Length: 104
Image (tube, rainbow, N blue to C red; front, side):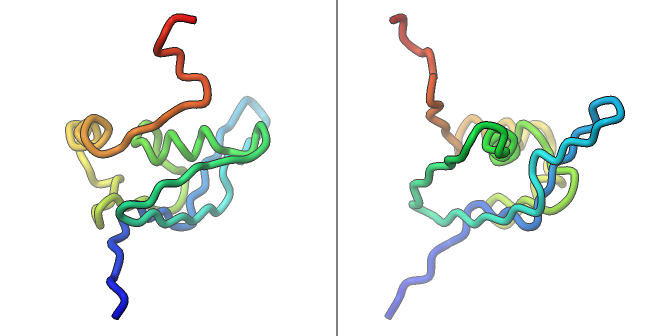
């Protein structure tokens, strides 16, 4: 019998669009992602592919222009700033490629 895994992060059809003057930049275009309990993932891609934008949305630092993001079955868009801060403080961790925590 297979044990069911709990979805922790559910990103569905997320887009992030920036307007820079007369230029429209689609940083993310219809991205969906599921991360389940005990998953260990990496997000990789070429420069300009939307990795940082996606990480900012996952980390509750930015919101999508379109689509939905659920964390533990709760819509991020309906959370208060204090709830988002708790998620960043207690639930989500990032290791950046160049993290500069220690002096060289």
